[in-house]
Amino acid sequence: MTAIMIVLGIETSCDETAAAVVSAETGVLSNIVLSQTTEHVKYGGVVPEIAARAHLGYLHGLIEKAMAEAKLDFGDLDGVAATCGPGLIGGLMIGMIAGKSIAVAAGKPFIAVNHLEGHALTPRLTDGLDFPYLLLLISGGHTQILVAEDVGRYRRWGTTLDDACGECFDKSAKLMGLPWPGGPHLEKLAAQCTNTAEAEKRFPLPRPMKGRKELDFSFSGLKTAVRIHAQSLAEDEKPALAWALQSAIADILAERCGRALTRFREEYRPLAPAFVVSGGVAANLTIRSALEAMAVSQSAKLYAPPLNLCSDNAAMIAWAGVERLKRGMTDPLDFKARPRWPLDPDAEPRQGAGVKA
Ligand code: KG4
Ligand code: ZN
Image (cartoon, rainbow, N blue to C red; front, side, top):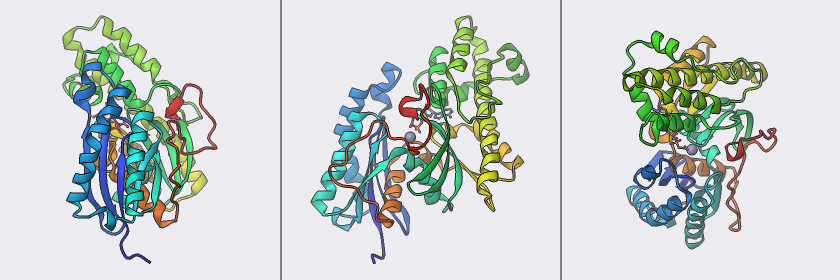
C-alpha cells in the first residue's frame, strides 16, 4: 500500500488552462490557472478555435510550473488525471493527450475525469464532506441540481432547459453594455442601486419555472425581459436593472434549491443535511446569502468552496483523480474525449439542455 497518493490534474475543457498537483493526505500542493480572458474579450465570449490554440500554447508551461511548485518530478506521481469532457472538443483533446503522454512516459495510471465530477467532489477536498450531499452547480456552462451519492454515482434532479445561469448573467450584462464575462461586472453595478424596492417596481422581471414541481431551470425568458428593458434604458437606471436581474436569479435559485433540499431530506434522511454551491456564479454574494438563508430555514448547512476551487481549476480534477485512483478506477489510453458527458446517465434528457445536461 502506498503511504502517499499524489495526482497531477489537467483542465482544458473551456477557457481556463490549468494544472495542479494534489495529495490525498495533504491536499493541494500547487494549483495554477490561466484564464484566457484577453483572448476572448474582444469577441464577447469564448471562441472554441482560439481557446484550443491557447491551451496548446500555455499548457506545457503550466504543467512544468505546477510540478515545480509541488517540488516533484513526474516519477513521484501516482497517477495523471485530465478532464476528458464535457466541454469544447479541441481543448479537451489537448489536455487529455498531454495527460496520457505524461502517464505513458512516467509509467503511471491515467484517469479520465468528468469536469462536472471535479466540481461535485470539491467539497470533499475542502471540507471533508461525506456522501450523500445536495449540490447546486452554477457556472457559465452548467446549471444543475445533483445529489452526490458516491464517487461516480450522481442523481441529476434538475438542469437548465436553455441558457446556463452564468450565461444569463453574461448575455444580460452584454445587453447593458458591460464587458465579458459580465457576471462580476453586473454584481458591481447592482451594488450601486440605491433603492431596491423601487428597482423591483420599475423592472418587474419574471421568475421562470418558480413553483414548478420538477427541479429544472430556464433563463432565456429572463434574458429576453432584460433585452426589452435595455432598449430604452437611461444610463442612471442601469444599476436598478442589474439589481432586479440579480435578485430574480437569486430568488429562482433559492426556490428551486429549497424544493430540492426538502426532497433530499425526505429521500435520503441525512443526519446533518449538507448543501453545496459551486461554479463561478457562486462568487455572487447576493446569491450566496439567498442560498444561505434558504439552507438555514431548512436546518441544513451551506458549503461554498473558496472561489479559486469553485470556478474552473485543475485542483478539482486532480482531486477527482485521487478519489478514483483510491478506488482503482483508472482508464485506458484509448479513452476518447466526450464533448457531452452527463454525470447521471439515467437522468431524463432535457430538450435544449445540450452539453449543459
Ligand atoms: O465556473 P466558471 O469559472 O467557468 C465555467 O463557466 O465553467 O464560471 C464562469 C461564470 C461566468 O458566466 C461568469 O460571468 C460567472 O461565472 N460569474 C459570476 C460572478 N463571477 C463569475 N456571475 C455572477 N456574479 C459574479 N460575481
Ligand atoms: Zn466548470
